Image (cartoon, rainbow, N blue to C red; front, side, top):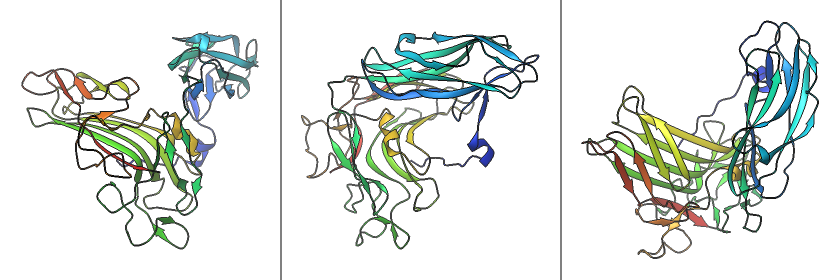
Length: 362
């Protein structure tokens, strides 16, 4: 479950210029930001979140005029402009104006929109994606614990149901990544490092083998890792992961994946392999570990209590035992893949409700 960790060159890290139009005769509207979208994370329905601000600049060779700023997309009413210094502005080359946007969800679930700018540069109107998740204000909130100074990670993460899980580091077969030396406490300090390269507050995996021998795999995790190859003080990060791997499927075909945390699609490459990975959270150091609460991981899947055996004391599961689970916010406590010949021998749908799960109670 390794995450690819790369550092941007210094200049790109300071200001990443995303060109949102092709070069025009004169002006070129660009967004000065390290991301090409606004992600507002989780916000209570009926409340207004903090404003996110960005600068729009002219990176072209001539002036451009912004004539309008508004909202469009699927849920335009869930986003609002907190401040606008761009409408009516004429930007000379190298100058910029500022817009701030807020998220005010009107319904529970994923919400999306577009910040739309009308201007006289080529490709107008220009649109910047907006997204967020509306949360029931009466429901329990995802939270995280204080930082354990022995290893630099949160003591626990808690899901919407209040289930608190700590990093699973035991060398008893119930944790996927135990500490290298089980006789010593976990640590990431200047004087002692006794910690794996990656470990998990929670993890789950589901596997299917097609009739042609192809591997069909779903990996879900709330993971602790580092931006460096080895555990390093100050380089701790965390994220929620959703990963799908398909093998021996039809090249160029699209496959639909339904899993406990939603629905995704992947397209197979020329070798009949399809890959999808989503890592959302605190991916840069020093980390703001609260960003990981924005991932799709949650509530945590646990063993179905109506199906024997019961989990070991102190844990939510035994990762060596495939088991039925509960916890999907959509009621999709299964892994299903649909698409041309995905199961081999003309089978266009494969599905399982068995998962291997890891989690240690805090």
